[in-house]
Image 1 (spheres, protein in one colour):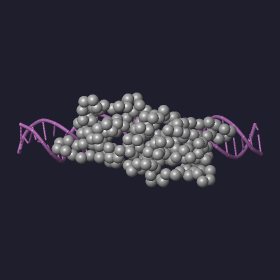
Image 2 (cartoon, chains in turn orange, yellow, blue, red; image 1 turned 90 degrees about the vertical axis):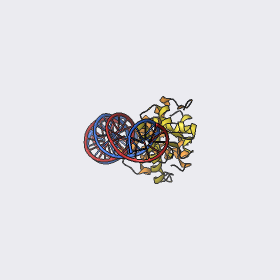
Image 3 (cartoon, chains in turn purple, green, cyan, yellow; image 1 turned 120 degrees about the vertical axis):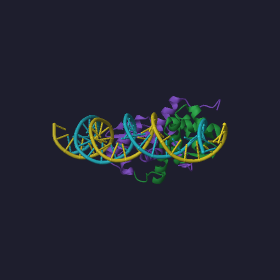
Amino acid sequence: MSSLKVRVEQKKLERAAYVLKCMAHPMRLGIIDLLEQRERLTVSQLQEVLKIEQSLLSHHLTNMRDKGILGTHREGKNIYYFLADKSISNIIACIQGSKTF
Amino acid sequence: MSSLKVRVEQKKLERAAYVLKCMAHPMRLGIIDLLEQRERLTVSQLQEVLKIEQSLLSHHLTNMRDKGILGTHREGKNIYYFLADKSISNIIACIQGSKTF
DNA sequence: TTTATATATGAACACATCTGCATATATAAA
DNA sequence: TTTATATATGCAGATGTGTTCATATATAAA
């Protein structure tokens, strides 16, 4: 097929796959959904809603922060997590409005 | 946090994670990008563009079909693959228009 | 029928991911 | 200072994923 090629550059594909892989988990998608509703939430607040073990949640949050999906800042004893990039939310919208998902 | 809860139902989160996990691979994202450009492509055509081993490509395609991302139909010796759901494309658009990815 | 072409499948290994448990750290309160 | 609270981290077993190689199947051509 002449003139046909992948339009997205390799680096971008790899980066996208890397981030998507992190999003591709029910609990992490749930976290994203919660942070679309609240701007920022502490680990304890997330834990209360999600009802999961503390260290497991912490692992997920650290993971998402490492990939650039979430940001954090400390306030006293608490650490607040927030969506690093609002455009991530669009993905959730895509999922909601798709029969495949 | 009273009145805060995950809005997407658990089943949907699991299904979305399942499909996203499949998309979250550079080569498979590349395949999606190609099928946005061409409506349908045979395995050989994809192989020519992607320059990868036949069985590896076949595994990826089968995987994507199993998850409902791609559909197929045979025409003589060839098997054509196509995007099962155009709304999947929106995801690629989201990725392109996001600084996180 | 035999042979070539297109594609799929299964086994197996290397490697990554998920989770739980135990423990560490940072901050605030007593 | 000691203690409680909030959160992170390291390790390890179980499980999942990506890739390759060898082989199977389906169709068409000779």
